[in-house]
Amino acid sequence: MKGTFKKFAQQAKQRMKSGFWQETRNRLEMEKQVAVTKGLDCVAVREQQHRQLERMIYDSEGYNRERLFQQKVEEILTSEHIVSNPISILADKNYMSTLNAYERQTYLIKLSAKYQEAVEKYRQLHG
Image (cartoon, rainbow, N blue to C red):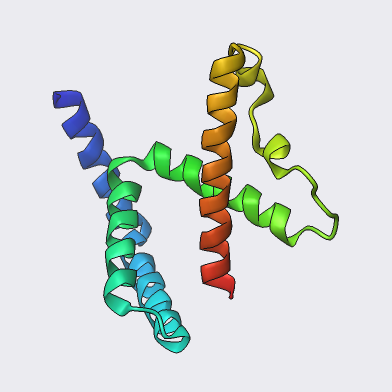
């Protein structure tokens, strides 16, 4: 517990030194303006931003994994090449080789759902 508190304190100090809060404030305001121009619910946008910020602070590893996944999905969607099976690109083949058939199927179903969420998020942000 003590190590976790110390880790959070160090991360908070780093955020303050790096200008994280100013950048975050600017980004949140820009997203709010985009939401207004697109006619989205500002309260829902703020709630989503709040959840994202909490995740960024308290689960930075998970947040970074999610952000990298979103970037891969965006690369697939904006690629000039037609991608017939995006799940095969996103799947961790080394991890899949350790799974039995049932676990592999479960992994692919979860990955597919995660991909669909990422595509929906991309479409909301980019029209």
